[in-house]
Length: 289
Ligand code: ARG
Image (cartoon, rainbow, N blue to C red):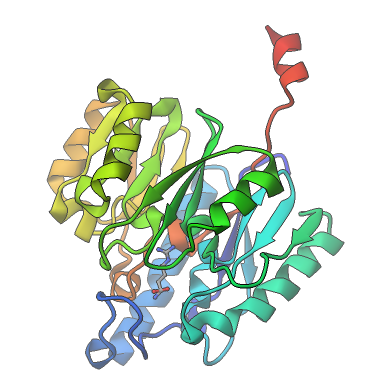
């Protein structure tokens, strides 16, 4: 894969028909939202393509509305896929679907190895294990959805450092709703989503000059749930305050209307799963110096 490659799901079967996080209100869902979801997903795909990415799209499955959030399907690095196990029965039906998706991707050489999570653990994929390419660590959220015990599995599976961050609220139930590492080492995050210990961990690892704190309004607009490609940050429609903040730091916002997905508690990062992340071998790095 010579380009950033993302998995996305056809949104044809997306709706809000159950409630497994506080943003979801099945009574508020209307057919107009379904139409808007199609448009929003297409606009996100167009934004990724315009940023030079490739998008692999999988088919929708009736009865699995949250299949549109493939970030939760697995943790992927170096062609290795650690399959997710969902906390809520409502999403567990996605597990065999994503397993066969990855098996097909393996046949095509897009991934190389598929690994199962040990029994008794929950883990919701890249939503709770965010690869920080600058620091070479997985930032790992746990609490509302993913088990703390799954973090050691991630460390061993990928042979990479992990940093555990406990999530303090039901609103920000996946790490990707409140934490986004950016090109150049800056980190956009929403402090109130974390326990005091987790916040201290973030601040110990990310110097103040690299921290960009989101406000409650910016976090509730799901703008921290962003896809970053070089200077571009692709996100849901942003409040002016965030536009100003990110532009001042040299980032370019690409905004997409993802309102129907926000009604499900998700936006651009979780509507995608990055498949091509690799570690440049240390030997190669030194050779380039
Ligand atoms: N309705 C979905 C859920 O609650 C939204 C998932 C959003 N995904 C994410 N990685 N934040 O599971």
